Length: 213
Ligand SMILES: N[C@@H](CCC(=O)N[C@@H](CS)C(=O)NCC(=O)O)C(=O)O
Image 1 (tube, rainbow, N blue to C red):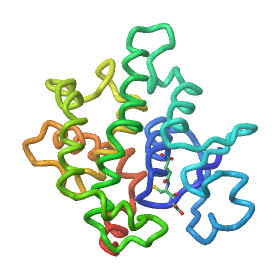
Image 2: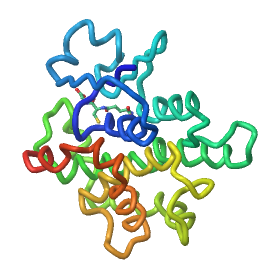
Image 3: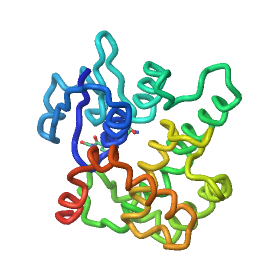
Image 4: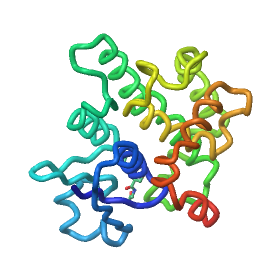
């Protein structure tokens, strides 16, 4: 199994899950000049990471990769069983993280890192989105997450699932960008996730990279 990977990106998410699972994998470290090469388009139509190649399966989108892995090794418990009630909530939080929670964090990032190249941050986005608006947008959509995490460490079935990995991957950026206050329940949740040995192994170079941004 091969995971195409760039440090500090969304590729950390499937790597983190693989580390949690204890599954052997080959980490294929790429960079933006490798992803620009014509062959790379066969792996990812938008030339991004992560991509997982597992036998005949070549799959992109970090949440889809994590869901695929959690189902493939379902006996390891990173996804609830298909016929369980928890499965519905697992899907809910998995989709919520990718579709609802991530966009305001991405917009915020674009506003606090104004030197991003035009390719990553088109001028029209800079003009139309303010940092404050992104924060308000995030606070609004994060409210159900804050509520469900009262008195618990994980989103579903009181154990870590792929839904926590994708949610954690989004909140990691919210934390690093200063969008979370210390007394926010989301800070306690993400701090707990970041202390997991598997996360630390997967995110080895986060601090080095952020220092150069
Ligand atoms: N929704 C996709 C986003 C993938 C994505 O935007 N990856 C970024 C890194 S976080 C990337 O590969 N950027 C390199 C580039 O745009 O050239 C996912 O979750 O996998």
